[in-house]
Image 1 (tube, rainbow, N blue to C red):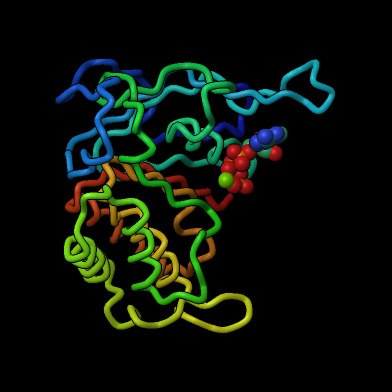
Image 2: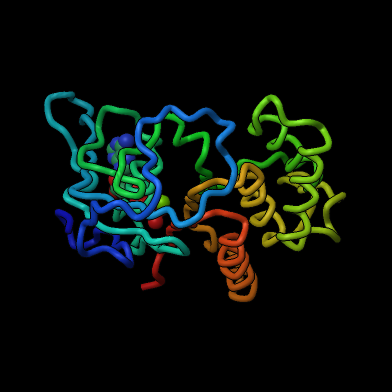
Length: 246
Ligand SMILES: Nc1ncnc2c1ncn2[C@@H]1O[C@H](COP(=O)(O)OP(=O)(O)OP(=O)(O)O)[C@@H](O)[C@H]1O
Ligand SMILES: [Mg+2]
């Protein structure tokens, strides 16, 4: 599957699948208004590779090579030890590596990813990007204001925020400041759920998460994974990456 034995493993990955599994979603240029829930998205990738130029510029360093797999609707995991290329592969699948560098095919329901794929998919990064001086509700409202289509009314945005707070079990801490290195705020699990909520707010068709359970205790990790399973009901497939403790 990859050049080195540390390569990440997609849990559904063996046979590349190109067949249409539903409505095609090719280069249709659908605007960000098409963020409404569309279920049953399958993501397939075939012979995906990624390399970067070395410092001297003459040679390239291969980060991942010849990775193929299928992510079916529901939770999918990329597993591998540290440095094996999980984040890089997730970035390539999420179309966050630009046009240069990545090679191979990434398809949604058998068609190329739409140009607005970044608008209709969510990505929760490994290190939370969340404002500690704002409350949980304010962070969610900020994400909604930035990322929902401009035609969305204030009431619609508030409804989305309320729904996410309810779904993620954040009602009791919605008014609490998230906190940072200078002052204590919500718990680690609540912080992680807020980060996930900031992506769920747009009801992404696909949600990518980079190590959503790293740094959490076992109980919180289980509650986050349960939440991600439930998020399927909110219209999101959810590939995620997780490191295997080795
Ligand atoms: N732009 C880059 N330039 C040079 N090396 C890179 C670059 N991006 C990634 N790498 C290297 O590629 C390897 C894979 O990195 P990546 O971040 O994808 O690993 P990972 O599996 O997500 O690791 P972790 O579990 O620690 O987050 C690492 O050895 C990293 O140093
Ligand atoms: Mg990583």
